[in-house]
Image 1 (tube, rainbow, N blue to C red):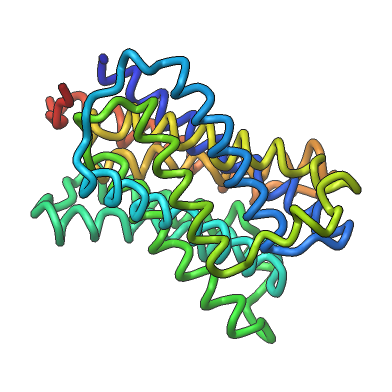
Image 2 (cartoon, rainbow, N blue to C red; image 1 turned 90 degrees about the vertical axis):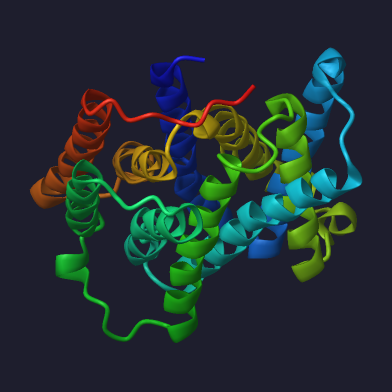
Length: 300
């Protein structure tokens, strides 16, 4: 796979996450809970991916139990991200929750530095600073403020940055020899199991699914489990961890555009400025890394 294709896959994975906030807001408006939305999202996402995996059985290779358990455990990071991020949106404004989640931009680089010894390059650092500045403009933090916010909402949003950065990191490093068509359902199954431990899946028996939860379950499963997991497992192994993190920052511009088009939120000049600044930072970092001849780990 070419580097440009890998980069596009990671961009697509990040963009799909940007669609989630819209559906979550609608779901909360109808009274559904964090456990119902995250649990149904990951369960049906895993179910769909296992069906796809069965059609691609010829790509399967024998795996050790240890590898299976590692992939399932790594997937739990994705499930925890959903729980923490959705919980944050329950108690703090969505614009603040997204800023807290977006701290994954520097957390991801920190992971790559600590665990791989990869010090951020100058283009990556410039991109990171621009992304963080753009995030605060795009999320309208300068007019919203942080006063009077729920401590749990702030903490859960901040912790979601660490779990999301961890998910991106392991997607590019763990069991890359295993076909993405098998890695993806194993990781999403791990996400579902982690959520079910925290929130037993009562939606199976409560009637919530047939009463209307399904309207949000399926788009959340598609854009929060299927698309990003497949894209990250295919694209991230071909990129540096820091580069994958920067490309994933496309999530916020997508979230702002969706809020404008679907939720009919007012998006003034400075929010659009923040969106454009993030897009510029992503393009700058990617082009400078490519020009510098950066090399990425190759998967077999």
